[in-house]
Length: 536
Image (cartoon, rainbow, N blue to C red; front, side, top):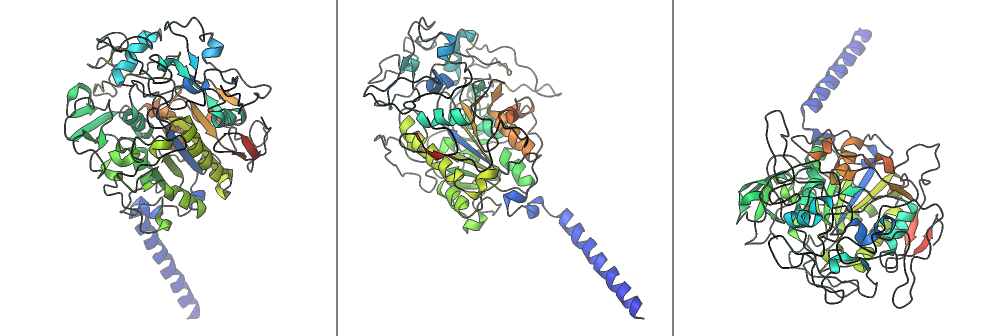
């Protein structure tokens, strides 16, 4: 009799477990969200990806003479000497374009004493026009159909300021990161154009599928239609800080990487400087204060209804940072990134935007304030317990129109009204993106060449990657690391080059760092102050 009772008890327990399992499998995948990002299975040892998406820099604007820097006008030197064995970089110096430049105006060095510059033209069609079909000789010329110069007329650097560049005695931290980690000299914006197209390409590999929900589409959607391809800086529809009279757009076709991460039940967050206020303005180290800290058209996943936080509502508690809470919707103030880091709740994926005065955008920010933000952020990560499993990816959302001498491959052709690469309405003949023959015009690209850096215990040391990359290479790395699948429907994640070449995951190869290696820099000077690396 006792044996029968025990057997019945086991049958009951087994049945209950099956019922529980059936319920769990039928439940939404968000029930499986990992409380600790370190528990989520990954293809690599990287458990935390932190993407820092800065503003408006071409590759040559920061690395034109890397690794050779000249003293500043006051005699100061912050970057002393490159390491032996520093690899060759495709820049103005190595290409012999510092003199006899095809633009008719030679590139020139900008000094640390004058880091504030005017904002260049980076309109979708104008950027193509000055590329002149790959001759790259229109930067000192006039805009299409105009007598106005393409270059802005800077109060200090003059009317051809577009040809200026900074070196390692201004952007010292970035040069030190390049000396000790990995960077690409063959990375491009996915398309031509300004900030909003840049962030859409980062998050979904496409600018197609924008619907104007409020105000005029002119300048924001190709052809001035209410639905199509985003080519300008429209604000996100539904964001309480979006401009009342500015075009407001919502992405209504493809999902973003945020949607993929939600489906997989992973923690993630989009962290925006100034998100707690629509009007706050902060003055930086160099005294610029011409923009609000929060800029709606830089606001990452606010462009998708599924990840919109319309009223900028914070999570109910810090324990919910990175989780699907139905309140903050993964869109947060930047301060909560550091809260999560300090509480050891760093999400699997974090996408960061500095407050405007520190985002590097010419006209209201500068390299000195940008360096202060970058160094403080990376120092904090390196000092954390999570650093040993973290990869920081730094890039910029567009080139601002600054001169660069390289045109990348044109993988997306277009003959939209705004195209100018090979002549009016001409960036080649667009191809269907699917079996139905759908054309997604006004996605001419790759666009301008833009720096990209990978800083991680697993990144290669003092390494320059020459393989073709674009913004959606970052998207693809996230997709591959967590097995998320592809966006589809013409997204460039399907053809994007891989970031894996910038890493070394082989425990037997000494081409990467020890997992606890750190490089602590001074946020003002960019110099090395502590770490497990050779000093300058």
